[in-house]
Length: 99
Image (cartoon, rainbow, N blue to C red; front, top):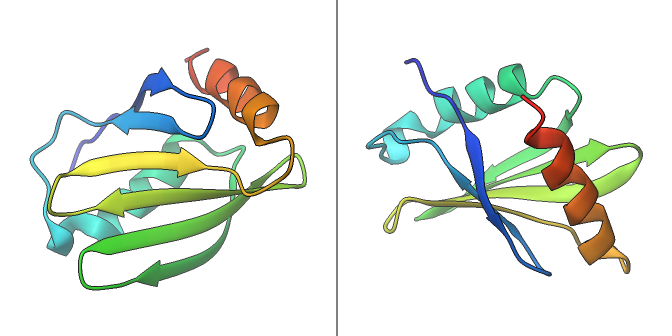
């Protein structure tokens, strides 16, 4: 599986991620592994999977983020639960687009 993730857009509450790959729930484990191989500066903390949604908590510069995969719509996005989430998401977006 050769997937390249890109940051498609940013909003005040999320970074929208794209991968140009027709994926399903069966691909989630491999996709999560590939994501953290591509962005080695991010530290994976916890993986959880539900019926149609998988979430991965991760840390960057000691801040908490969540990477979400929604299978039905094939949506991928990053959220930040911290009080200064908009600024943190903007910094992370900028860093992820340096590739």
